Length: 100
Image (cartoon, rainbow, N blue to C red; front, top):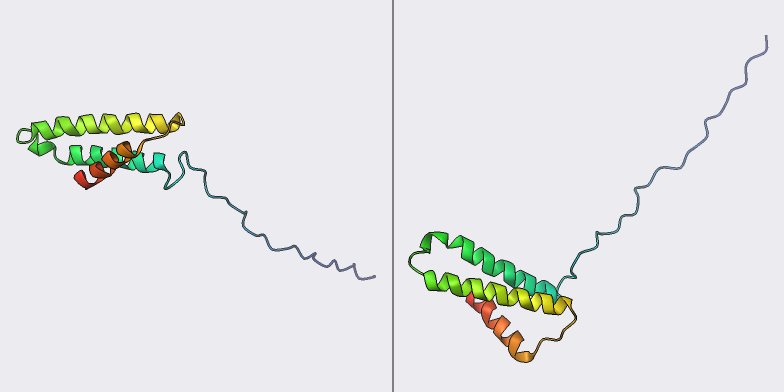
């Protein structure tokens, strides 16, 4: 009997991991809109973190609510491609200091 043919195994290239792109963000980091949204979240965290002191500083909580609404109107204005004035940006900077 004749021996059977030996088949050689074909070398297959090693699999490489797929190239992955980072997920696209809804808002670009460090843009004005992103910073205003961070300020909005900071005011919200400040307000919820001090819920126990509601009776003592009720006026401060209403002021925080007004500030939060004002910041959100700025976010909407930026989303509508409206320019913000220097005075508005200075007030936003003061809010950063207030809710630090």
